[in-house]
Length: 413
Image (tube, rainbow, N blue to C red; front, side):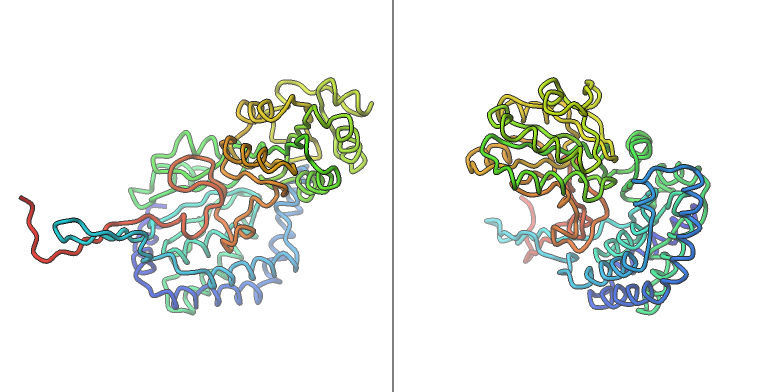
């Protein structure tokens, strides 16, 4: 592991200094290698899937792990699309001149070596590797044991692309072991070679990383996302947004886990929305008013309001106005993604301003919490902290900055 860190640090310097066209050529070569290696990737994934199913993993887990020809094509396209993004390295973020004639520039620079620890999503191998390369960084990727075979095959394709473009293959390295002790070594910083850690996985993994890491962390612990149907919401729009937000993909962190319905429209909106969810195969746990809307609703507990289900379950509560909705989200939410459905522009503006989450939406599904949908090409994760990166972590968020100061012989008095 220490040698892996040293190789990454050496590769990071070469990648940071490589011109943008060389990094882009590597990304395009990676995409092609992924397409060519699809049979090997699918064969490895079949073994990972068989193991997961034999272990009795949930539907949402299997969905995150599953690869097929369409998904591999999408992964390759996502890597290729990163090459089309504007180069973040060396961007002049600000410039100004002081009265003494010194000219200051704030310039974007790579973070260095980024360690990504993830569980059942093998696509993270490609997404994280591509974003790190585009932003001039090296990546150390630690796949979970559940996706180890699939991720190994994807990492081989990424290395092929790097070397085809004349860049060091060590710029994207997959930790070659399932031993959990490797995670501890990464969190300790691998002898000072790691600059930031990004966990992608369940609450247990993220909590451990946030607790034990001796280097900065970009992460979110929970994706307890809310849809608030305001008094001025169009019912048909609310139906469409809610159905997509909850059930498009139940295992993603942007899936809605709680529905809040304004008391002022509950008489017309609550029953149709709850019935729609139940008929679509989604269990509903609700407050007293929601239980009265349909006999299939079970009673919600205090724990339900703070739960990220990642399953066909949703908590539903009737709230007395916008203030109550914001208060509920502040108390129980995870500062990830929240949506308001309303035709009232003033109410929407208040919600967007007052809800302290990384992503807030007006009249749109919470499942847009995705770097690709933001135009970032792909994402390395969603960050809910308040320092540096927040929301989808794309190439710009994987850069820090330095100051360049231009003088003409000035000395300080």
